[in-house]
Length: 244
Image 1 (cartoon, rainbow, N blue to C red):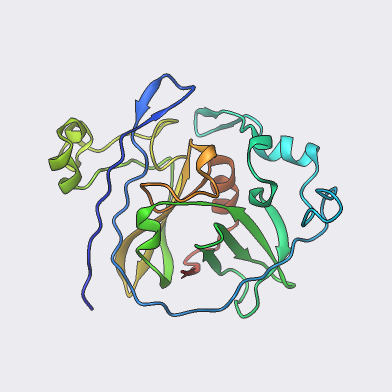
Image 2: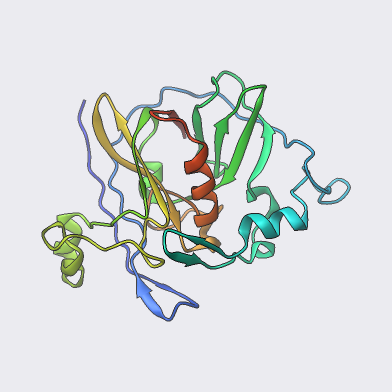
């Protein structure tokens, strides 16, 4: 199968951190779709309703404060997320699982900006995600072959050629070290297909305001607090299905 590698431009400013940073760089070979199943999952009642007729139930304020508050991890202090500025449907929450997927499967619903981790008993943990250009470039089924806490980020050579200022983060120079400004955030999950790296990633991001949106760069990004939660729940060699 032919593989078209997609590079991306990513030199954006992180407001509030007072420094320019690079946002996630993934290149993704296109694959034909394997699944077209609709996902119409409904939310389990685990918190106060958003309001009559306003949609599904969301976690309580106390739960949200705990989920998205400041946290220390791996020697870094991750800032609290102003979650009230994010649509409640993108909060981490337990929902009824989309049908047809065994427990332990990750399902990425690209159009609706959701990621599901299927659980036993007919439920799933659902996370809001942001989708970059490369996030639309890959679909199908794969395996989480490798997982990394506080990963390095290495821009591809073609990106460095276009943006020479990134040369200090090139593979030859060891990449960009882990940290709060790293484009891959606190965790990265690497998707393989047929034993080959698809160059498609699930990863954290310091840009909480990108959740639920289609951005100009990156694969599939979650808030750092959510990617840490997902990382701790995902079984080894988990199956992943990406739907377009």
